[in-house]
Amino acid sequence: MTIDWIHFTPWISLAGGLLLGLASALFILLNGRILGISGILGGLLNPLKGDIGWRLAFLLGLAAAPMLFAALAPAGFVQAPRIDAGFAVLAVAGLLVGFGTRYGSGCTSGHGVCGLSRLSPRSLVATGTFMAAGFLVVYAVRHVFQGSL
Picture 1 (spheres, rainbow, N blue to C red):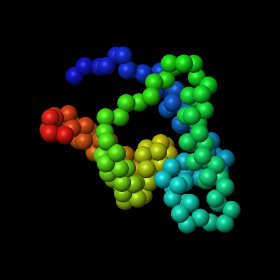
Picture 2: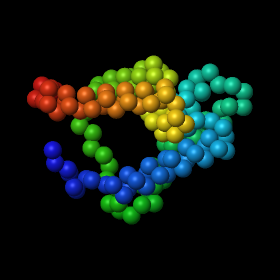
Picture 3: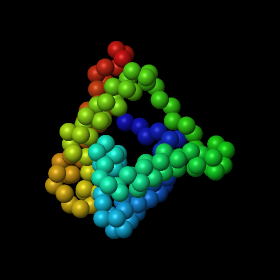
Picture 4: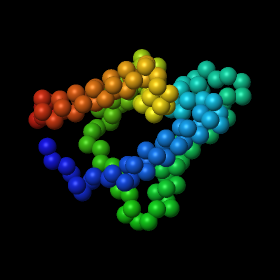
C-alpha cells in the first residue's frame, strides 16, 4: 500500500472535522436537536407546525456554503472532484444510500458524529457497519471486479 502524498490533506481534513464537531455540538446545545442530515431532510416530508423554516434554512445553507466558498476562495485553492461514474451508477448509489439511511435510522453524520459523541450503542453498531461496508466495496471494486466494471 502506498500513500498518495499529493492528495493527502491531513490539515484540511482535521479543520473540516473540527468544524463539523463544533457545528454538531452547537446545534445540540442551542437547539436540543441532533445534527443528522437525513433527519433534518426527513422532517420536511411530514413537517410539524413551525418546523419547516429552520430545516429549509439549514439545507439551503448546506447547498450554498460550498458555492459561496468557491466564489470567495483564491483561484485554484480547491479543485473540483473528479467522479468516474455515469449517471446510472450515481443514481443507484444515491438510492442505496437513501435506503441504508432509512433502514439504519440515520445517516453517517447523525450516527458517526452525533451518536458516537453521545455514546449511543446503536450509533456504534451503525458506524461500524458503514465503515465495514465501505471497506468491502472499495476492496471489491479495486481487487475483485477490477476490469469488469
